[in-house]
Length: 319
Image 1 (spheres, rainbow, N blue to C red):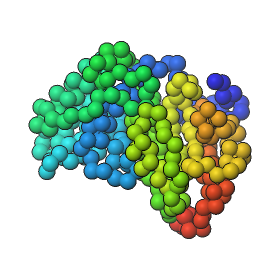
Image 2 (tube, one colour):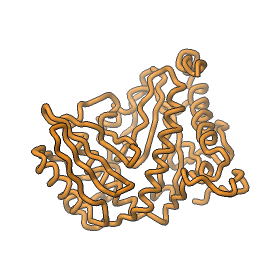
Image 3 (cartoon, rainbow, N blue to C red):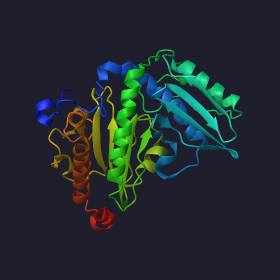
Image 4 (cartoon, helix red, strand yellow):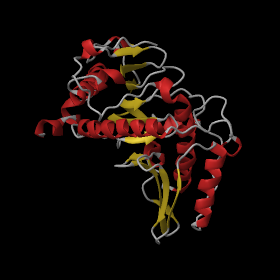
């Protein structure tokens, strides 16, 4: 799909900021597919070890100054943390009792990656068993049997991480404007996206089943009304990186709402508003362009859904 975003339309600076690098899907699609599966292996360790938190927030990963982290996870009285370093391209394991080990992130099959990760956990005295079937991926191959996905382009992975860092920074500013319940900015390894969610405070109707996702996960994630935003690098449905926004339940008229900036549109296949990443990357003011998209899509969800904005945004008037 062509987004129609050009340098002229977004007022491109003479030298685009390297903080928002190019990320054409065609340049790293094989690497992205492999990386998503690697992240799922580590993410499922977090799923097993972490204490359960509402909306399944305990399973997510978080951007760091060098990559993505599980953050500390309990293992009995000990703590363990796994970090993807996308600058030196290493996977680090460390524990609260002094263990620190790593192995290089380089081209290898998902099966080999899985065996290395499980070997390190055993070496630490923290053996763990996970369900080896990937989530939210059609025609998935169990991790320990997947010798098909084995690409790793370090330069593109670093670009991806840089976008996550910038998106995290801007999304956190957007998060600070909301007094009501709001999620952390976190990375969902199932959908391969960085997301943030605002809540109206009202219970939502039962969500329809989602292919490839256990129903218990879906119902817990969408137990209450939401307005969600995120960054997704692309995939089979939309082969370009985009920022997205959706509401659940979507109020009447949501898909026809006018949102900012120019270039944002409602993508029927996903049932979401999307803003091509290029519109942000090529903007003279990337932060403001992204904030405009988040704010305008939230306003559409909140106004059409009759959210109590006076209470939910009270803090925003102070900053």
